[in-house]
Length: 551
Ligand SMILES: Cc1cc2nc3c(=O)[nH]c(=O)nc-3n(C[C@H](O)[C@H](O)[C@H](O)COP(=O)(O)OP(=O)(O)OC[C@H]3O[C@@H](n4cnc5c(N)ncnc54)[C@H](O)[C@@H]3O)c2cc1C
Ligand SMILES: NC(=O)c1ccc[n+]([C@@H]2O[C@H](COP(=O)([O-])OP(=O)(O)OC[C@H]3O[C@@H](n4cnc5c(N)ncnc54)[C@H](OP(=O)(O)O)[C@@H]3O)[C@@H](O)[C@H]2O)c1
Picture 1 (cartoon, rainbow, N blue to C red):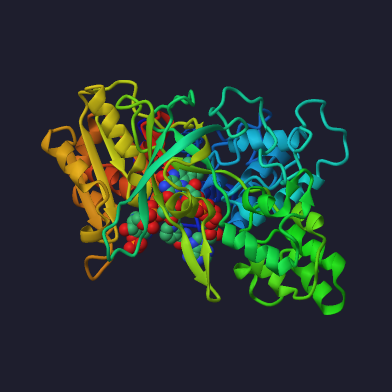
Picture 2: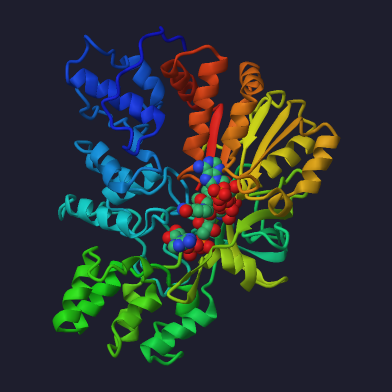
């Protein structure tokens, strides 16, 4: 796309505001236009704004929604942006779009929908569960509840409500879509064998990351590199037992057809305490404790400890209060599956799937808190166990159809996972295109995942370039984007040769910083203004040449 060069816009958006380069430019342009500052600044043309937001943004009506509501490329999908800011940006948009703005992360797939499909399903009353957005957590659920009230009491369309959609006691969550073959969706998981785990960091690392292999034989599961794998975890039985003890409830207390302890292990989330649990406590306590429970249920933080309150800590906050076990279970969120980028290629072995999983563990008030799925995979599941799994097809993340195209892969930490898969796929299919991997982590000596494999691929000429960045080896942090800037001229040359760019890993900080670096590289080495470079990168996205798998 050719964009005429012009003077940079004076910024009307404070530098501290949490916007990406793209969003800042777009908002500056929009505000400048609205404030009639045309004489001093040139807002982005509609064509340029459209290039920034490929889903389409009708600015002709001063930001009003288009008839088709085709505004889904709008900037409120940035996972690095706080929910309040996203909701402000979405103000005035149609209800289902505001519901979409409340989602924590664009199309991460964990709820089993795309964000648009999930908000559409809630809007059309086909989906009752407002607590499915894992990255959005309680904030998203609360916002959806408020927005849901705007729907009014019109009757739901006939389709798609399922009998047990509210019951977390049912280990298999209610289908949100028509189930297909086993293993093809979270509604129809398959059973696969857990083969083994091997630690990817060496002793002395601050991280605990596992290479995991799973046997798919007999599952019928079929996948493509770029897809993610869904795992249904179970809670740590020791945590379930601690909850039972805190409740003073018997393990075999019946919850429907099942025992309370079993439901605590595989049916409900024991992570962040949900608003409903505090609501329950507000009904069964009195006085100051009721006021506190009510405040907590309303999203307030009366004692400044809300961030520490998982389900067990919430029970312990109200000592001596004994909720009915069934009401207690009903107040909890269902235990949801987690997604992991697939790190293997079916072209190498269609029955062997690999994952690369960072174990989440952190102490709060002397008790170790465990990420449920990452510690399930990293320590609880044993070799030979079966696990409930499914493939989550990637939304816009996959190798170029033309195997001669060069690919640039940027994946620090576990972000390397899909690129290991890409490299094996390109090797197995003898793809002629060049391959460049940017990998980084904390320390070269401890955190160089797949070092031998990558060295082998490089020696074989398969991995054309390997660029590394170790954040904690030097005095100052050094990240993949710093390495990218150092080799910016070559990176630009690859881009000019038609390279496809892929980014995987941390969504909140890394992904936006990498994008910012790429914009700088395009501006510097492609002899473009910043605005032109932004439009160039936006166009890469639009044409599928800049793809992200971030979480
Ligand atoms: C498409 C996709 C692909 C993914 N691929 C991978 C992958 O390849 N590898 C990988 O490891 N992960 C990957 N993830 C992330 C993965 O799905 C899980 O989110 C991650 O493993 C954590 O899940 P958990 O169940 O272990 O933790 P949870 O039980 O969900 O706990 C995580 C929560 O704990 C809290 N928390 C974490 N650390 C701290 C702390 N230090 N202090 C206070 N609170 C804290 C945060 O609220 C955080 O949200 C991917 C996610 C998506 C959406
Ligand atoms: N929310 C958080 O605070 C937080 C923190 C860590 C991990 N995570 C999550 O934990 C999961 C797994 O993490 P992981 O093991 O893949 O690795 P990771 O913790 O994301 O770290 C991988 C590498 O990226 C570096 N890094 C940190 N900030 C960066 C930035 N802005 N730009 C580029 N690189 C940056 C890290 O450096 P340094 O760590 O030395 O800065 C490290 O060298 C991911 O889901 C990630 O989002 C979240």
